[in-house]
Length: 134
Ligand SMILES: [Zn+2]
Image (cartoon, rainbow, N blue to C red; front, side, top):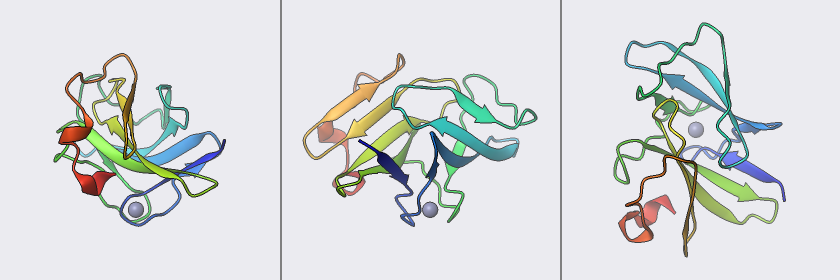
C-alpha cells in the first residue's frame, strides 16, 4: 500500500520518493529542509550538512508549501501533525516528536492510537486527542 503525506493546513503533498519533506528550524533560527523517512518508526533524517541540530533540542516544523506550523500543542507540547492518506482516500493522522533525536511517532485513527519508536509517550491515548486532529 502506498501512502501520501499531506499538510493538515493546505492539504499539499509533502512526500517525494521515500521521504517526507518538511521545513525545520531551531530557536537560534538555524533553518532548512529536512527529509524524513516515510516508513513509520524509521528515524533517519537527511539534511544539509550545515543544518546542525543538537540531540534533544526542540525544533519548529513547518509546511514548506504554506509555512504553517505543524505543532499540535493541544495534544502534546512536543508533537507535530501530518495527514497520511492511502490511494483509496483512507486518511489518518500522524503525530511525530519535534524533539531532535527523539523516536516517537503515533498513527491516530478514529478507533485507535498506534505508537512507534523507542521514546513514545506512555500517556497518549485517544481520549485526550481533540477530534479536530483526527
Ligand atoms: Zn501546508
